[in-house]
Length: 171
Image 1 (cartoon, helix red, strand yellow):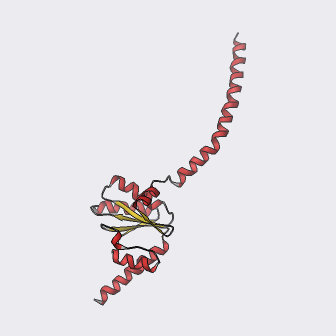
Image 2 (cartoon, rainbow, N blue to C red; image 1 turned 60 degrees about the horizontal axis):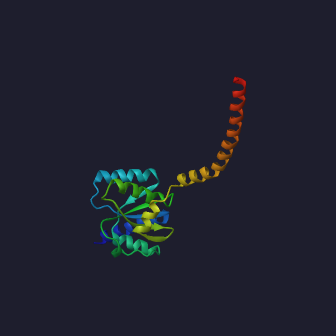
Image 3 (cartoon, rainbow, N blue to C red; image 1 turned 45 degrees about the vertical axis):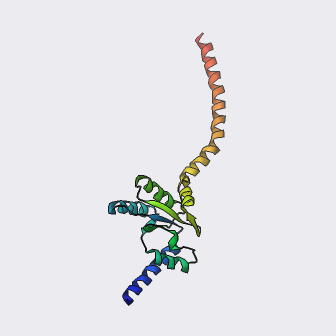
């Protein structure tokens, strides 16, 4: 019995260390996922500095409580797994969302971002935000659009002059 208690303490400590490192955390229900699908998800997460881990809800609740996060295991149904994001707040949500689109057995239940627990609706809206690269591309595009329009306006006048002079030469 004491061995089990020590194993549980180790798991709680392991979870607490992951909580300290994470920038965001996604709660997912993975019931029905096949082993190879979980492996595929883990590989994709690993490429993006994120990690898929399964902990018992009771042990997770203890670790959350010790980190002053109000997590109640009764609020979360199904087989709960955690996706820890270590480099970016939004990437784990986006990766889970993209994976869930092709694998209906993975369901986003909620998460944690900036120390706040997010419900399913909030987690999904965060997952659907454009990526940083997409936002930067939109900013660059909107900044360069007036310059491009001005360039087209000036070049149109010059082209018109050239076509007129060419018509005079051809007469």
